[in-house]
Length: 393
Image (cartoon, rainbow, N blue to C red):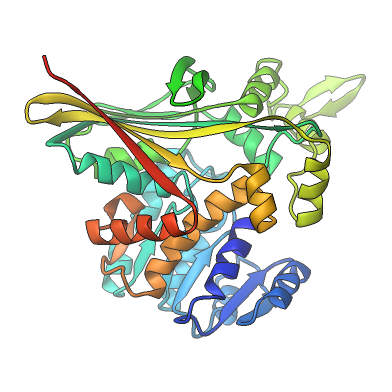
């Protein structure tokens, strides 16, 4: 996939890396990647078959999982059996359980990895991933962290109709799922597109944001002491499109009868939705008709107490947009930010900088590791601006 390919391309330049095994069920895709790298070896693998994964990964020190979250448990078991460290991009959504349970069952393997002397770092993209590192950094500046709110506004819209820059099936499924909010020690499931708010972004103005299913409120509730609330909100034209389809019933998985035929609305929508551009030529074609809108913002807002005063720390992520990402790197903005962010976690493994054992998300990383991570991110053009406000009286 796009993120795994980005990680592999970056790893190819790391002097500490001897070999990269590019494994995929689609051998042709892995072989194409192998041809562009110097340390890569392509192999076909069934990610749901632990023995197949172990045969492919024989001798590896780290298993990086770029597959959908439904494969997480199988690949974690393979990592344990093969005595490999483990990394993935997300915990959910998965088909067989709810979002909170999906996170917790990965964390339930904590003692297994500790006993094996191994590390399993989960949720390592941009969000979740990079935002978790930033949230922990900000929280550590406070005497008490009370609230963490993540706002991701994606205003990338080409004149050529491309609703999502990742899998439309995954995107529509995410949009129609019940978001999870953390409030006072408990997880609260809310309806899709819940609690619309106009959020003021620096340089953009107010944008409409809604609750969205994501890992951060789940792990923040588990790993931030004294936290009262954690939320994740998303917005932008793709979100607006999905909300309209949802309210029309077109993101439902319940069959409906149409002229005597049974139709699953979500399957129909996914069938008709254009795929996310997956290679240089596809991105170039999408850009050929120009941009209708190109703006975005990721804001990590951390609020709490410092020296008996109420403090709010707003952290903004700066990264290339679609046009700049393509011109400089030949990839989309989504692949750039998520792929580079994920690679930097891999780089921590490669440089033996992860001493923690067990299963944990990025907010558990130590201050030195987070500092190294953000320093390396800045070298790749991913920077963070922090704006602080203190209520004096």
